[in-house]
Image (cartoon, rainbow, N blue to C red; front, side):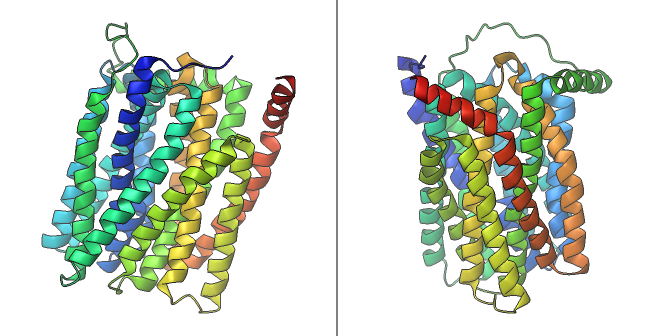
Length: 428
């Protein structure tokens, strides 16, 4: 039976799309994976620390999943919580800009570590809360449209603002120009924080929610009980297998950014090229994966993984042959993996929303994310050490091989889902 959107949902849809567009543009223009990585390399921070910023962010996300998922699930005013989260992110990015412009090397390193940790915790809280919030306020079809529309629109806004900033600041020193781009992203975060307040939550304001657990030990015990409960369910075991392997593939963006920053951090147009290619990836990913996802989730999963394989193979080969000096090659590689990773992130989220029971959404995604984060902390730290001691290209090669495995696993695990989709289509 097809879900029919209500009048209130039709009002909320453009507001949510506009708010998420601003948030997406902000993340692109101040991305920890791309922009902060580039700035860190340009400031001669140790390569191991630059790569380890991914692990630091994942550690913060894991702690949020384990200790705060229960409290997040019971938040009554979800709009206000999401708005405050955007404002905290804006403050964190603002602190990094101030440190870059006025701090010494040690101060910059400390600020980057602290801010990336806070960003990881706040972003994870947002992701957990948004999963429940969007599921309650939009139907399945609307969620799909929303997910891909905000990618394309956010990319367009980021490209336009980055290009304008680039043209208007040509005479400024590189660090000042880069900081202005991040500052524009901060402004987008602030606008997003106010926009979310205009949404009318379809969940009754007086809906009863139990008081959240205050004791960390009780929260940890509750987390393990919840994990054991979720792992007894077949649908969740299949989901977490997909989630873990694809989460590792998403490390392509920070490590492709790292190898690009190593090659072009002295270039006046290096960061602009990377931000624009990153944002263009969102623009293409929205309509591309939106169209293909109408066929099946499985198709998006397989093709996304294969795109990372293609980009990684070409970039690694060109690097080994010492033919990767042109910034356009790295921009093209980052564009390709961004398209792929956005497809992965969106399809995994939509897949979960479609298969997870209402009362298990937040707990289920928290357990899945914590498992994934623990894996990613170890893997990203290992790849960072490899990049520091040897060359970043070896991390690229490993991610490429992992993407091949992801394509095969997703093709296998979602076979029954695809067969049921075909059966449903034939019946209708």
